[in-house]
Image 1 (cartoon, rainbow, N blue to C red):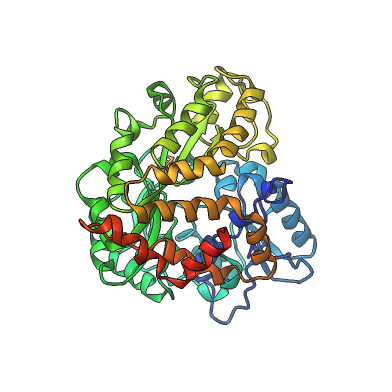
Image 2 (cartoon, rainbow, N blue to C red; image 1 turned 90 degrees about the vertical axis):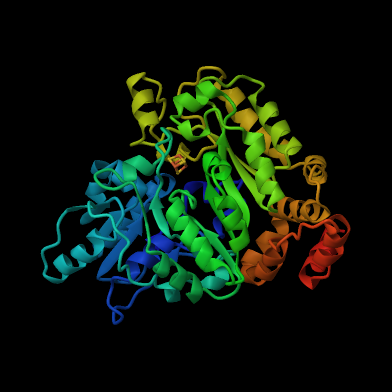
Length: 475
Ligand code: SF4
């Protein structure tokens, strides 16, 4: 089972830590359907050199858009050696005819129903050329083969997914193309999810679900069950789900300490272009303040290059993030992935300027822009990253929090993420990344809000020796 490295993971601007965060959960999920007697080698090229000199009977490769050409080469190599090769993943689902010549079988959509069927066909020597998922359920999925994951090579080995898909339909998102032909949002059984959490060692979890609060009934029961499990966790959710009801309070009570939020754009016209209805007429500042009042840090996602963007969009976006103490920002150049509504609409308008998938990495402009030139867009993108993560803005963003503990957490998290690349590089090379997990857990510790908080939180949080080490490192 192979996850080839994304092309940008080897660019001169490579930030190694970004590609050493999460293990290949999708492949480990499929591995659970193989027999315990099967000899399985799960390789992730982001954290190790691939061994392509073996002679496996079956090769399974996960294909994203910017590893597609590399994946096809690996597939051709193994087919020439006589192995049976299957390809699946987002890119294969979007462009099955491109992938087909490189595979014996291709998989479209999620593999929980089709992969066991394939294994049966394979055993009976009658595998099909195409497996298209249609039955969407996570009932009775076998436990993920986490024993195949080399935990020490990742910063966040405890990543977990308890839902599939998302209830929304943003036009730039891969989700609809991947889940076409069946349900586009469904969840695990709550008991199964809690059992999976229970199997994970340590305290920290990272939910990689597209929208952890997407099904409020499920999320409510999940958080209820997690109370008392002494976990700290990170996840992703939408603005409207943060503002609605009291689910976010329940998440915080269960241990949510940082949230990825897709703000994407401040322009209503851009939101309409993106079909991002869940953000329309929503009070972003109110959502931010609500998260901060619960001690939840924010990773804000922003897209540049939508048709209503002008030259000031970069400064406006960075200033807003700093002013409202967004802990980390992820910026993207708008990218019309094949299979998405955005791609279809741009193709109809003749605006796609290249189909070199290696450039579809959200850093390059691959379409005809409208409000900005391609050069302005790319320069603005890099400027925004540099500016947001300048020490002065990291400090400003930290100091804008009310709580002392939150100021410190912001400083360590944001500074640690972007300002110590050499340290991350060293930890990756010495294969000791996983040793930093206690420090991460400390930064994600709960902030206690009470009347005495403003004076007590700082000494409390500094009592921890791991955090002291980070303070020393910074000074
Ligand atoms: S909310 Fe996020 S995951 Fe859901 S469709 Fe939009 S971009 Fe995709």
